Length: 347
Image 1: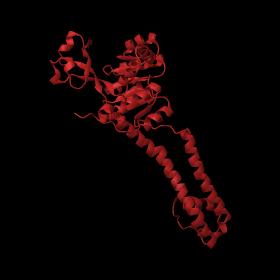
Image 2 (image 1 turned 60 degrees about the vertical axis):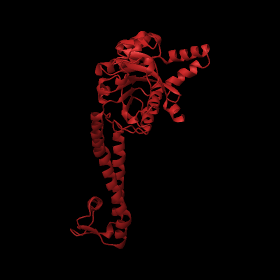
Image 3 (image 1 turned 180 degrees about the vertical axis):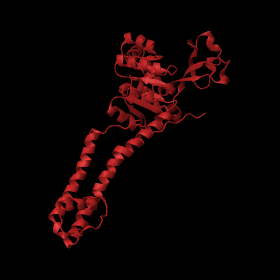
Image 4 (image 1 turned 90 degrees about the horizontal axis):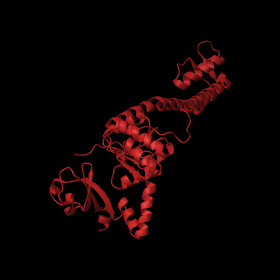
């Protein structure tokens, strides 16, 4: 069955780089509109002798103000009208363009602060309602952004990835690669509930600080008890805390770097091969998949899709050299070394 597709759109509109408050934007627009209106009032007052009032024959300042408002907002009632050639020229050349400008300002203001906000709210609600089987990335720093790039390189649709981060700049970067984004604090229940974390496929946490990462894991585990969580922890002492908080997988980039360094000391190709395994750009990659019905009852070393290196049977990890690896069982999860897409395309 095809997996539900998440619409490729923002969960919440990003702030502009200018960062003007909404009240300031509204004040600027209304100020520009009223400035244009009073400019027309001034022009009409200066050229009031070119106007004719059919009511009492005199044109006062109130008449000028009334005529300006009526002529800008409507076509007029005819009680005051331009009669001289100069007055008519002013109406055609100056007042009419200003009339259109004022109308556009008010229409644009209504769209921005009423129609657009209502549309964005409705769209956000629709996107949230349809979120399912998606990947939630909590934190879009160095590790989070690299993880997203690797997921996309491995064939994951970026529209199925939701990035949560408090930084507008980082969210803009995630938006550019096609991800859904939400600006907010991932340690708060309402933020994670907004991205429907309870029905996500997996959760990746990389907040940049171990204490924040552990708090996010606790919050995510509370809201999504059955969703796998992977967390990036930089201090060895905090790895156990992250697991106790609910993370199934804890990645320590410092330790992984140490493994690469140690591997290079044992042989110059070991570190290269380990990096090759970790990246989709290499010739081989590690793949985790459930055992197929055709493979049940067969040895691990006979699978045709790659070289089987480990079996996960329940909570137990079984190596390829152990006797249990000679018979695959239904429900097993196989970890294998397979040829990457890059290697297959070159082949």
